[in-house]
Amino acid sequence: MKNWLTSPSGTLILAAIAFLTFAGYTFLSALVLGNWNLDSSMAAISIVVVVILTGVWLWALLFISQDSKGALIAVLILSLLNILAGGSDILVFCPTPCQGYWPLAEIWHWVMVLTGLIATISVGLHLRRIASQEKNH
Image: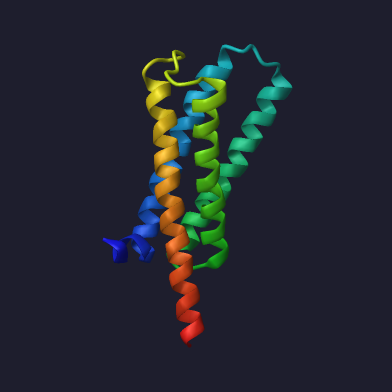
């Protein structure tokens, strides 16, 4: 299992799952933010941020299979953002048990943390494996 977790295909699959979780989170956030009556400039900023993050996720997923260190570091940072976003919702913005869009929001916040954590571990181990291979050559 550890070999699959650190393999390029294992890391790619876990990173893709974390990305899909992020995508679902953005839809859930749009529902929640829709209740806040944001003005158009705040909505535009939110859209631009999501588009940029999505672009970085897609770029990183494209190059992660080639063992690109930059892509792996990008996925590591984005996976940590998943943990931060889900964790901040659990602890601050909609403390567990979250009653907003119950039970969807509660489940999704925990899924964000879990998939971000698993992807972070996988990418970290993968980067360590690459570093040890480079050290031995």
